[in-house]
Length: 300
Image (cartoon, rainbow, N blue to C red; front, side):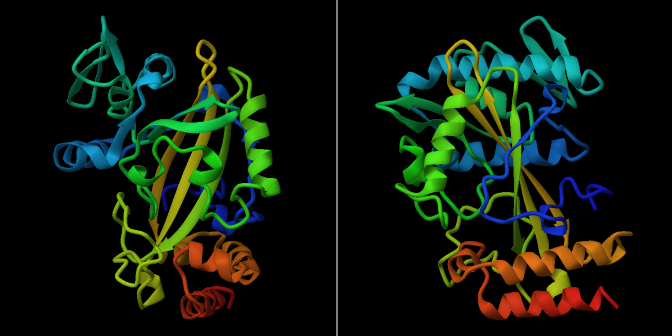
């Protein structure tokens, strides 16, 4: 698997799905470019060439925050990941790429997104609500940037069980955004169970023709993990939200040295999901039952 420990495996440890679940993050470990960077960037290249309006949106008032986000990301990469990235004037060199950090023809948030695997979003507070003001979302997990761009966050989260407007969780999210301090990023994790290993999954999970629904046999599916981070931009006060997708074949759990602990934790999570939570994860009762039955074979 992509990791030999449980940090990037929220499905295999004590973890409550559909909780806010934020934890403090060492600023030096904010971003995690890896061996698969070239694959992610090639897919972003393709999506920008063919579906730019679907993966990139930016309000006029998001430009200053986007510039600040680009500067913060570039600075982090050249200092914390100097084995990959090298600064050359106003350019960043890495892999076989050279990216101009001040190209007026390219929106700064788009430039930032072409440096790393992560998707990026800028959250700005106006009229006492946090809004999704800009986004470069190449790899959504069963949602569409076009549907969410420009909207307040309680509307962005409207279909997430327990997070719609007026809920306790929605109020907690707003309070967390309000209280986030510069230099003190936070992270959280999500997971889903998918029938394909595509990075981009913009099709609604609620459609019967969803091509990413779980398939049979169960071991042929993939564990899709989102590592999300929140960072306050000190100059503009906006929030930079990052989403890094990790994909692992489900069958890799069988070879993991902690497979029994992973299976036990995952079964507990699956049995605790409400009907709405199961639907949000794109799984029906048959999917849940089949996955639990497969996991139980790993306990023997």
